[in-house]
Image (cartoon, rainbow, N blue to C red; front, side):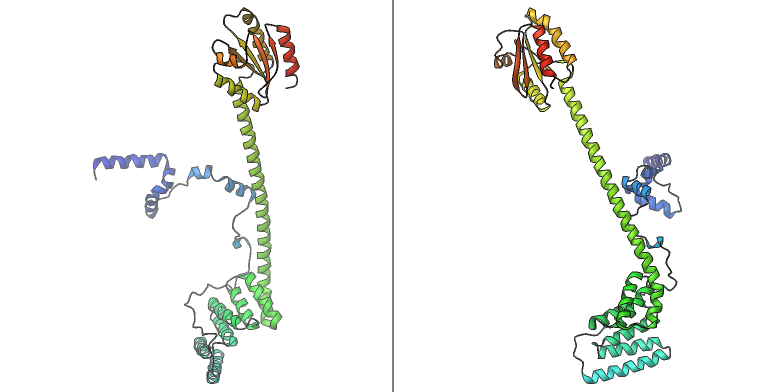
Amino acid sequence: MDASKLGKLKEFVDQCKSDPSILHSPSLGFFKSYLQSLGARIPPDSKSEMFGDEEDVESKKTGMKDDIVESDVELDDSDVVQPDNDPPQKMGDFLAEVTEENRDAAQISKSQAMDAISEGKLDEAIDSLTEAIMLNPSSAILYATRATVFLKLNKPNAAIRDAEAALQINADSAKGYKVRGIARAKLGLWEAAASDLHVAAKLDYDEEIGSVLKKVEPNARKLEEHRKKYERLQKERKVIKNERRERKMENSAETKTSVHEATRTQAFQDGKVIGVHSATEMESKLTAASKASRLVILYFTAAWCGPCRYISPVFTDLASKYPRDVFLKIDIDEVSDVAAHWNISSVPTFFFVKNGKEIDKVVGADKSSLQRKMEQYCSGF
């Protein structure tokens, strides 16, 4: 192998040694499979264990599972057999017309099948009954009889197919329900088996039905109770998930509110005087204050204004005293268009603005008037 490729391979191996979790990467699935085929033991993915799905963690805490697992229930399955997977047996055409001659011939084949059953020749019995069915495919009893032989051969799936054929022809076939119920019991389908056997018992009760029900019903009841418990746990889990979702939404809303408030506070620089340097900035500040339902105090000043130098510290102190209000300072020479919009004829001039509208003003460096109006308007905001 090329020396440079060997070097890269060594680097990769060293990386795997320092962090084995990279072997769980989907793109390295082929390499992981190769290592396991050689008998290598791959350490579990510690990251997935530490940062598993939040709902999986919740499921572990509550003991809830997404799927009903019958192995969680102690059932008597001593008579359960492995399902038969043979190709489907021959079925006749239910709608075909049957001549009297064929009906008689079918009866002869059935008699031969009964003799074979009594002699324990079950495969011969199946052949004879199949012949009878092909001669008289509209006879429910023939299908039901062949189904009983399939049961004796421990072929429950084949028995179910014949039982269902019998029930298609005769919906009130007690033997059809009985055979299907017993076959389902052999497959461990306890609830379906109990349902079939109860119908069979109502149509034509016999001791065999009662005997099978004694074993089927306890298992069916356990599964029903297990299912009800599962459904209850699922409802509880749904409630918990909804509560957690609501809490998340509430927390998210609170976070958004906090962020919004923090952003707004940052924009208004609470407790400080904000200098305005353009008409656009002025409009933006007034709009934001209106949305936040904040009082705005506009202070129009000029660098050459002596009274302004006296009143400016007072304005700064008021901003610190009333941090929930917005204090804007506008130099009329720097932002002359804003001064013109507000019809400023002398400085200092103060405007009190609420929801974008002037509610009062103070002209001149009148400290007491400014403080009084601040107390008047700020007490209500």
